[in-house]
Length: 356
Image (cartoon, rainbow, N blue to C red; front, side):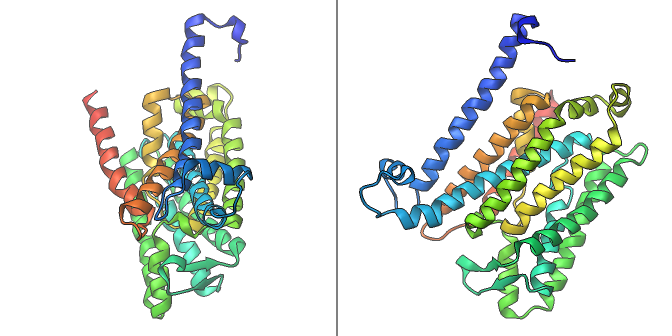
């Protein structure tokens, strides 16, 4: 049931206003971080020059190549990837009623990576190079993403089947995700065993999540998947709220629980598959960001979905910026940094939760 703002109590309106303000402030911080990410690097670019170049008012074209061809696509790719993985984690945690659900912990990222590896290695959908900066170039993104999506769907259906088993605990589902992650990691290693030296080096580097490998074409593809997924998730925000209350309660409210669960997992897996197919495995973003935002804006998906989207984009963008600077002029893959930060942060969230 929906009410007009004029019918709502003043305290409730202030409560909702604070949540909206958090999303707005987060969005502003995210946009400011994009400018900061474009400015910082092995060669620092003054912020006024960045703004002038982006708005087309620059008197010279001194920074055009660096900004438009390198830094801006990488910054936007980090933003889109972080937002996509985070919102996918929110949906998975909701429809599975599993607080530890995420594309990484449930094995979906590893499955998508294996599918992409099969496409690259066996179907020749990528050109492989031995240079660290350009280890793999996807020349057939549709085939690569399709293969990643198919393998992620295998994991998705297994997780859904496990979730429907009576009395299945979150711990059992996480153990299943660990087992599936090990299975698909073994499959990737199997392909690597039969690869030549150049292919092996390229495949090992590809598994590192790296936003630098995406150009404008890949960015457009990931952005399309993110926007489509986010629109779908927001359209089902009330269904996710109902499912959080329990299957029986949701069914009593008229929600088709199994349909919502299946479509939610399919959409979240699609967003994950597209991102992983282009960027590699990036862990913990889809796990930590939803829990951070739950503590700030609560469990209402009207605000949790956009807040987690903003948090994921901001976190991965800042992490990617730090990864480019910490070993400059060498570039550290962002997945290494997110793992170092994500694991302790999530342990802290668990410990704090149990203390409460």
